[in-house]
Image (cartoon, rainbow, N blue to C red; front, side, top):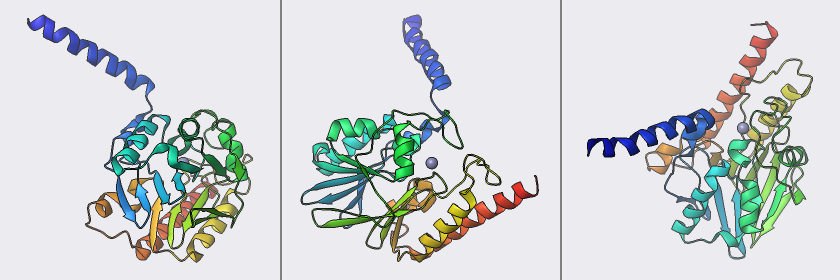
Length: 273
Ligand SMILES: [Zn+2]
């Protein structure tokens, strides 16, 4: 009896450790989170850490960011929980072409037949499935996906009377795009995780791009700021009602922190440390 109970357990342990070797360590970012309405027609439909946003309109919906490929079933379930349908998603947007935010876009396109918009530089990265990335090379490849339309800086995308404005905010990727819905903004990541910032032959303009990006982000009239990573904008506290999503000061603090981190990294690399 005992051995019959232990055997399946051992099997589970063995397959879990085999999986752990292949699964990226960041799968801890793929835990479910209860979907909820953030403000007006903007809903959180992502994971514990990787944000996906649903913006609803009377003529269909806009979905921003996919998380990993493995996140898509959660997004689908989250839409259902909120009473929305996947097939009503008409537009797909991306904040930046990394596998933890864009890895599921190809699958989302199959499920929704929606029109995918991306900036020119990120459309190229999406088409390569994240391969030949200037920072990560092929390390974080994902299923390639073709953008249907290119969004330029300041371009407006309108559906059902709802308009989003694309603000190109490169640095984290060459085509990172911040999406603004009035004074609610979904900010593309502004970090440089392990990036070579000084004399980077694969991205010579990276520091200038970051500087321009921070100037641009500071100029936006922001009340509610959202981002790609829940931990970057205090989502746990805000979702629990212990902090407000209306948080212009939090936005300024976020930009200050991010800009300081980039400047410190540049200084470190310039001094050869
Ligand atoms: Zn990223």
